Length: 379
Image (cartoon, rainbow, N blue to C red; front, side, top):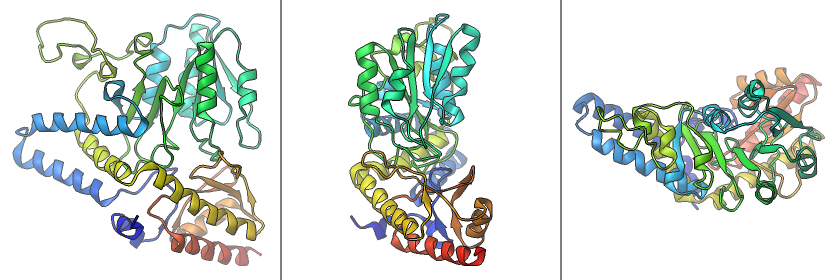
């Protein structure tokens, strides 16, 4: 793999060292090109290419399905992860006394849709994480006969802990519990296979590791459980005869398209589709190996400087995120990094570093050069 050629697709590398893909990613050149091409077409030709746009949308749907190991009819476009999970939370037939099990270190997108069910008598049960790790045994201990669903992030946003989706999914399948995954912190960095891991629902938008724009992502609803979820939003495009505007037949589309109630965000789908081609061309196994190797170099450098690493370094628990505690004030370090051309995230007193496949060891070296200058200055 010629990583240098791939790096050329990322103009951000010419302006600094970007190590913040767990937040909002820079766009590759091909995504910018797709946005420009669509805008030019719409500007110069109006809707002459509309049928082609719709056909392209279906190609992008197929790309996303391939990335996660699904079938295209099990995928819907959504505006973000919160919307996707809210469709699931709002669409299931809950009974008073049911409960949902989630870790207590989830990003709020995977918390509030479930807490919103309290008015229906549904309890949200939190699993206490242990130093950023979510143990399978602790999840299982919170489950009882009224547990309807377990929802978890593939990777925890703060600690970078990689959950064992296969083990959790098998546990859910054996007990007839639905399994939902917030995949935004792993899609584009780690391989995903919804069938292998017995996932019923998955949601993620594209602006982090998937290197696309904010406001557009994918929702997976397994064909096994599709009929368990009633769309909470419906519109002209939710039904089988969507183009027959004056024949009111409220028969829902047979697949996940029933969750797409109206017109597409076609511009963003073009951007998303261009980004997805990168991952399908390179291959997720190569991308994972590259990201973990860069993470190894970061971890080794932090250990050399006796800085406390808060991400798990155990086999199988690593992700693209490396989180550590600095000496001194983390916000001061974050500002110093920004002033010296290094982009990363500081939250809750921790520093979060998240390189992608186009980063290289020179980027890691620059990060440590700036870090050493800060440590020397801070004493």
